[in-house]
Image (cartoon, rainbow, N blue to C red):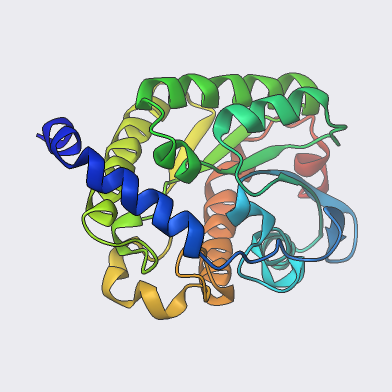
Length: 254
């Protein structure tokens, strides 16, 4: 049904897509370092964050207000030690772009990787199975090059609520995002070292608009804070206990 609707609406959808790109407010990525340590004491967790403009902090002024800063601080508080983190993210990146970045950029050792990818794949109409294949390559590279033991894939946000997008483009992209999330949830069930975190305003869609950035497309600081808190809870409660006893994380938490 969705494919038939896309075909029938394709001239309008293409025109709306061009129009949105022309009039969209272009916000910068959050300022600040892309690597750091949060908290005090011995390092108790090492985190790699990989993604697109949302991971890069578009919609927040600084990295401290964006996902990387909020997440590392929340984890340090929950775990009672310092958390080292590295951010690999760029506006416009698809998952395949992120794979290429992970191939060539210097990476610090990490226990856990968090991803924020999928929106640009949806916009580019990448097939869901190709998206999952690219995620698989990303996960493998993170393990090979950074020593990552566990991955948390953030779900694709509810694009049917993005104020910037006109109808029916909003409906079509929102349906695609939902389909991606269903495929992602099914896919990670095959891998014990991977899991999914739906974005925090998924269940409060009517209230998402006021929490977003002024461009109507990216998270605002309040969403970054909610997102980071949910990630920190999942990582500290469900993932840290599963990390190998030989990692610095597990040794520090004894």
